Amino acid sequence: MEEELIQIKNSAVSLILDAKDKRELDDLKIRFLGRSGRLTLAIRELSKLPKEKRPEIGRLANEVKNTIEETIFEKESRLTKQRSQKLKEKIDITIPGIKPLIGHLHPLSQVLYNVIDVFKSLGFQTADGPEIETDKYNFGVLNFPKDHPARDTQQTLFLDTHNSKHTPGETILRTHTSTMQGRIMEKIKPPFRVIVPGKVFRYEQTDSSHGFEFWQFEGYAVDKNITFTDLMGTLDYFVRKFFGESTKIKFASHNFPFTEPSLEGYVSCVVCKEKGCNFCKQSGWVEVLGGGMIHPNVLNNVGIDPSRWQGFAFGTGLSRLATLKFQMDDLRLLTNPDLRILNQF
Ligand code: PHE
Image (cartoon, rainbow, N blue to C red; front, side):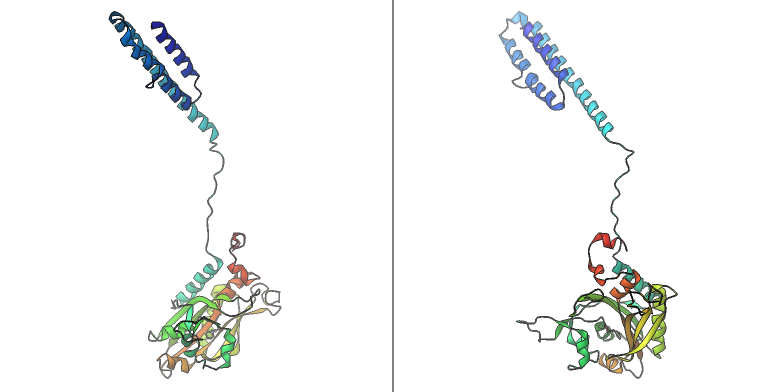
């Protein structure tokens, strides 16, 4: 018995010292000290020994148990130390870290906030409205009679009203943000100054300068004694603040059913400074907006007395402004989600 205990101790200690990792050590613990481990079984045999021998052998068995436990403990802490040492060698704290990707505002949003800032400084409020519209606000209120040829210029997309309670042709995708003239003027009393940025839709073939869905923003002001030159001055101020002080604006007469008189605005090409380039189709100027004095019929339609109040309104393509500002040669880049493109702006 004595010899067996000593043998158990020697083989346990040498195996423990040779253990390569924690797993091997755990196995050894079970093999010697577990419920059917070698030492446990040997201790159980003690009861078979003659009574006078038991205390002495018992003491030895205890010593063997303590030695095995201590060796395991020491080995365990040595293995842990070795592991953390190895880990330390693996981490090179001098290697530069991985930079997290930082996003930025989409070019259209940058332009949008820019526009809002300029008009805010002129006392304009910003409003928002629905993209799915009714004939009434897109055309009716704006002085487009039902069979007026000017409706054709709007290349309207109609919603399918099949099996619904809507009258065919009445529900559409808004073709311009001018819809918000009626919606807002019906609700608030003059004087007011409002801009409305938003998405509009037209049945249009897409190419580098046209899209079936694009951004516009509308601006209008109603007050006493507002004149056509207030409109021109406001637009001139906006263009200089938005594109830079040296940018020029010129106007040509135009026609819209909802403004009288009406104008079209062109800005000097930001790329070639009026010399002529591909961007401005060699003309030196780019068309960016339409506007005019709000037609008395429109004011009447929303319950504002045109003999007491006057107003101007204008609408401009926000997407067009963005491509000009960033000198993008294709409008479609604005709806392209490729980060390699977006990161350039
Ligand atoms: N809504 C017109 C368009 O989309 C622009 C415009 C707005 C013209 C306001 C006059 C006044 O072409």
